[in-house]
Image (tube, rainbow, N blue to C red; front, side, top):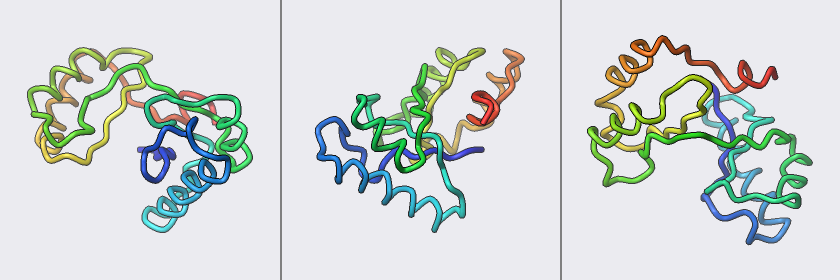
Length: 136
């Protein structure tokens, strides 16, 4: 498992002032270090995928110079998600070369870990970290 920075409160970074973009990244960076003892750099996944040259520069100045986008989601970012919906998303998106995001912060995801692993195994996929995928 590898953690990346996703900002503190999930705002559209392109609509924030420079200092607020930096504050979002710094606050989440401190949380990750204090809670998990890890530094998530160089990986930043901008909320909603919204970023631009300005936000990328601010992130890079803080050590987050690899803006990490995704190609599929388990859809587990909301409390209304069901286990069946998560599995359907897994069947749709878990494929070779895909970065699939999951939040693991809703109860239904905890009930389908084994089934998601079964999908991965049945497709002969191997999970890798961002560092493995990007060579960092």
